[in-house]
Image 1 (cartoon, one colour):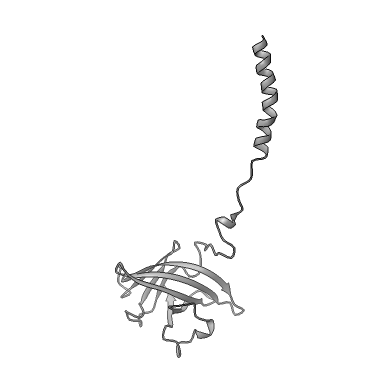
Image 2 (cartoon, rainbow, N blue to C red):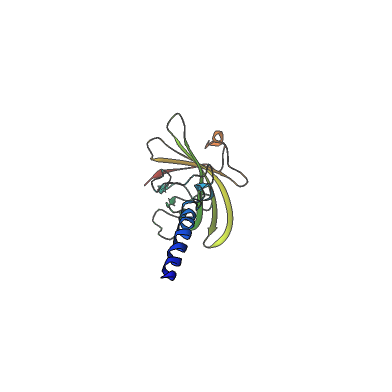
Length: 164
């Protein structure tokens, strides 16, 4: 009988400690560790995603068909009929905004390869028309270009596509 009393007494002493331990367990850290401040986590429905075409563009500078997948893969094709890419890269959208005229802008960092041969990276600035049917883009090798550089007459990196 003394053993039962000893066990009950020990349980009465330990139970508050066990419960206190459960109540004071720290909560997980805030999402700042998982998603840094100002980091854009794109939605699967971003305006940039989809197939864009311009039959007047010619490789190797520009490609007539561009597909931006929601999971961060970008592919460019040598012709509108091609099903196998010529150029493939990973795209990280780092910023998105809408201007006063309704254009949606993106800054993308793209690492790319040409037929699986590493060929570099680019800083893309994209502008999508308010109706979502036109994509204009320019790029830089060292930094993101400024929106004022989105001019086909003066910028050799300018390309324009329509949504397919």
